[in-house]
Amino acid sequence: MSETVKSFTLKSGAYNVVRASAVAQDELLSLLTQPLVQRLSAAAPGKPVDEDVIFFMFLAMPHAAKVKIDELMLDRVFKKGTQQQVTLADADVMDWNRLRARALIWNLEGFFTFWADASARDAASQAQAPSTGT
Image 1: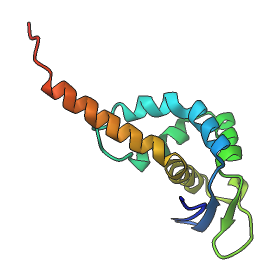
Image 2: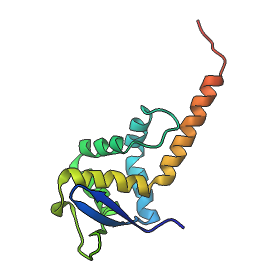
Image 3: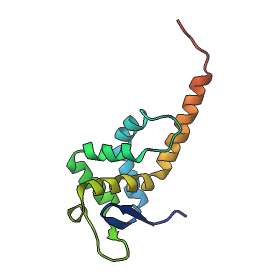
Image 4: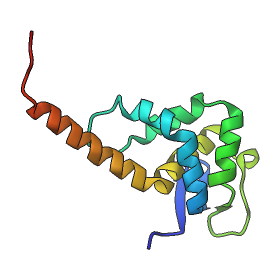
């Protein structure tokens, strides 16, 4: 069974994040598959997701979408070693976007693993396909 709480260390401190429920993860996939596929398609096939790609996706995202994502994925964030709940209002905005990226990669690790495997297989099959050059 995968862990249900994970610690993330950022410039402003360490935080414990509770994993989103399967229902919330499914909603995250519904909201984010298109922007994720657009960004991941530009990456090298078969490679693990680059955290910075996800970080910049969040920086460019409309605020209302980030609020919804936070409701789904970051509704239970605590300063490590305490029961003090933390939200965007309590954090540095760049750190919070970094936390969003790391938490998304963790919550949707199955999606990112599937993407890396499928893109590697696709690249390999394209490399083996006979050329139809003109």
